[in-house]
Amino acid sequence: MSQSDATLRIELQFSGGMELLFDNQKTIHAKVPASFPLDGSAENRHAATIRDLISWTASNLLKERPELFIGADGSVRSGILVLVNGADWELEGELEYELEDRDEIVFISTLHGG
Amino acid sequence: MPGATDTKPTKPLKNPCNLCQSVRAILKRPKTGQQLCKECFFHVFETEIHNTIVDNKLFNKGDRVAIGASGGKDSTVLAYVMKLLNDRYSYELDLVLLSIDEGITGYRDDSLETVKRNRDQYQIPLLIVSYKDLYGWSMDDIVKEIGRKNNCTFCGVFRRQALDRGAIMLNVDHIVTGHNADDIAETVLMNILRGDLPRLQRCTSIITNDTSEDSSGIETSKILRSKPFKYTYEKEIVMYAYFKKLDYFSTECIYSPNAYRGHARIFLKDLEAVRRTAIVDIIHSGEALSASVQANESTKLPTMANCTRCGYISSNELCKACLLLEGLNKGLPQLGIGHTTKIRRMHEAANLASGLSSPASLSSAVADGSAGEKVKVVTHIKDLGQLETMPTLASV
Ligand SMILES: [Zn+2]
Ligand SMILES: [Zn+2]
Image 1 (cartoon, helix red, strand yellow):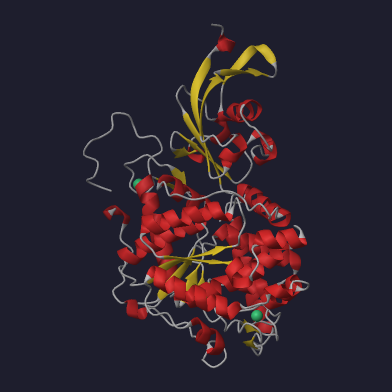
Image 2 (cartoon, chains in turn orange, brown; image 1 turned 180 degrees about the vertical axis):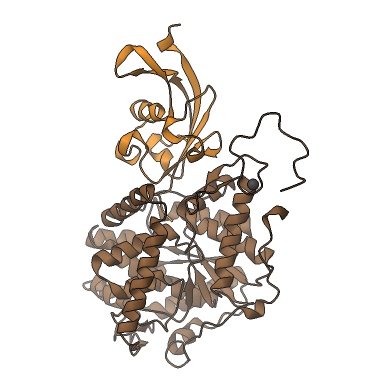
């Protein structure tokens, strides 16, 4: 297996209305590339971060209305809460958090209904 | 929390809780930047709401309080927390759930199922009042008739009145709603953008009743309304619901694209991302603006009377709902208005169904409720007596 084929098992969870953008799936077990190319070069790669996971999820799993998931600067749209292994991603480095095998990442929309 | 760390973790704890220091933090508070573990978060969240209730003297001991319940995150958390605090601090409130069925297929019918589960989970009686029964029109009917352009106007006017009518049926003193700090900041922003100062004033007060000025014809009612989540951030409400695994419904209303409000909300979230205190700053601005409006307009109370058709409190001959209904019913005279009979029938049915204790007859409440009696005065909950002081966090 070459470096670029390695994957991580990531459990993605969607709630608070987020699941509506993912075909109503609340949990998706995904195999996410363990590394992503740096500046488009095939040689230089960096370990996958949440930033990579967000764009990977948007291009591979998202079913509709990407503008309700993706926000500015490659982050999620404001108003979406993210948890990394049960904790607020603001405590875990947010976009720069490096994914590990068997991580559990939760996306919760706060924008749906009161 | 000294003494609680007998079993020392082998690795140093990653992100220890700022309060107990012994458990991993799971939340960074939007208000303070503090990082908290799950138990400390629950405790702080609940205690702050308790303090809001006590500091603002929202209730009297023995009050009968309706929780406006939509099945969404805010009102679900509100119902859960109101019950919890009522038990924990012996408020001795008589709690009921009050839901409005606007008659929106595929939206409200599903969310009402959530409310019914909440009724069973929290053991709080529930009354559902529907637009169809109150007004002869469901929102589905109205949209069929008028299209999707102004339907939110109808819905807004009808909902406010329907909540009051439900509250009269339930014989409650007070309605609490789940509006949170983010909602209030958003409404402040929208009222400023529209230059709507009277509404600006109403949206920032934590408790309102019909002693509020009403220079622009906003209809007010005799029943107190308050927002125990006025200082509670949406992020924390959602996190609380998530960690408590509360059962709530999250789909947007199919008739409400709400573009303006949507933009206001995103704008707020973006502001908050660069300035942590944005939400609270905007609420404070709203309060300061409405205070200066009040000072200028030397509190002239409008003469409030009753709608000549339905009896609802109104500064005009016809209340807004009746005005809207008149339009809807033009060309459909067979529908009539028939509020009172329908309401009375529903009221009787509701009593039979829930065994609720002798609510005042609705017809008489509507007929003489608002005109004769004195306006209800917000009194203090000093007689709540031995309210516990805020327990120290070490005791969690
Ligand atoms: Zn703690
Ligand atoms: Zn009327």
